[in-house]
Image (cartoon, rainbow, N blue to C red; front, side, top):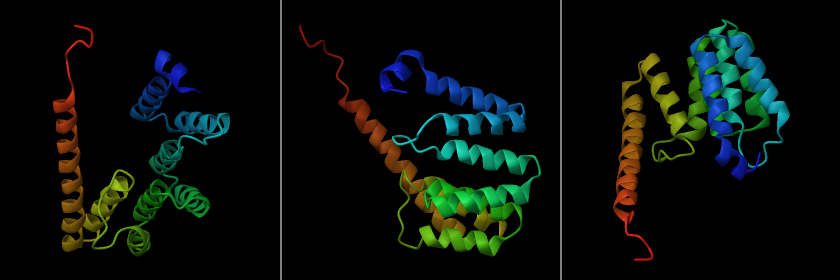
Length: 172
């Protein structure tokens, strides 16, 4: 779908709201079906479809199909080493109590000096959850601090953007 169509009709927002509603109602089977339909409907060259795949993995886990969720995430990760695929794999491993395996995935993406960015913040959140579960307080604090620093940078950026906005009419 082109940007003009999406902007005029809010299609992407409507789809996201619909999927959120299915999730809130715990209609996991229907949610997975709709995500699969959307994945098959488009070529996904300009937009990464990770959110849809993440929803499928989460719905599988919510339906207590944890092994199936893990297989789905492993396949996704094997095809695409994207941070979102890695994050889904971390959570899938955590639900099956494979904390070492989850930590192995985290270590591939996050080291002591890895900054938290827009591309990897979701993986930092998963790492914080993992370190909370496995009791690694030092590591949890490190990733939490990186997340907080990133959030502060975002707040500073949005404040800068607000101060740059001009409300003067251009033709006065």
